Length: 343
Image 1 (cartoon, rainbow, N blue to C red):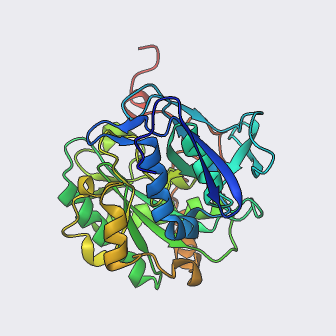
Image 2: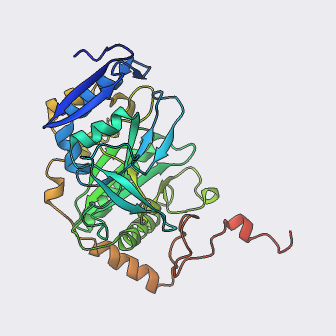
Image 3: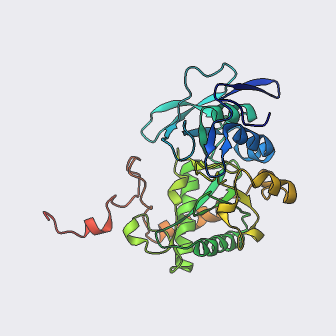
């Protein structure tokens, strides 16, 4: 099948014994080069092995673009009642306790079922559906503030790796598919999301102490300046991060692509697309190969967290959708806190 089917066609794929219908396979999803829904399906088939090595068994939040990249969109956590009976789901919660039956990345058929619905973004929980109380990934989001260049993000990533290396923690890196980088650590299955977030807060604070002109741990945007923000709250319970190997809802079909640490200096994120990644994967292999076989200890970061708290530091602020947490400072921007009462 060429991927240029007619408007009313439906292509039925046999994915390891599961039939997955792809309606309107010729519908253009990425107008920059004209790639279609079926082209996106073929991309995920090409990267299925590394994709499922990182997403497999995890709940997914779907970002749907029924008209393709650049069109209207919405997030969908709850699987519709019309889903086929073979589809695996799991109950996930929001910070306020609301529950939903979310899609599980059980196999490639589940991913392609979502693609058929116009899903151009998979946001992944940091745990497996079978062990929801155990967060087995630390995700370090290096978020460029306005005015920050990608060279600064590269430098922040190298600083993050150096610090983790110092603690004896192996790490992996990927592009976000946009302006930042994500650093991942595969963890031993021993800690929950509260503990993983505490480790992320400690890491962000230590990076800021060592590189104050480059990196910031400031939650409030007014305090960040032109520095790379280490978004520790991406590790808060119930938070998701855009998945590795997943195609972004950008008109050029950019991918949140795993890369080797030796590629950080030269990578051009916009060049990593659904059109280029399969050939690159075939040429140089999976930079995250074996990641899940070498789980790491969070203890060095938790020890750093304990030292910070013993020195008098409060917890870092939580996002506004979360209940007030023990040891959290006042949840108010510093500029507002400085205003005289009654002003």
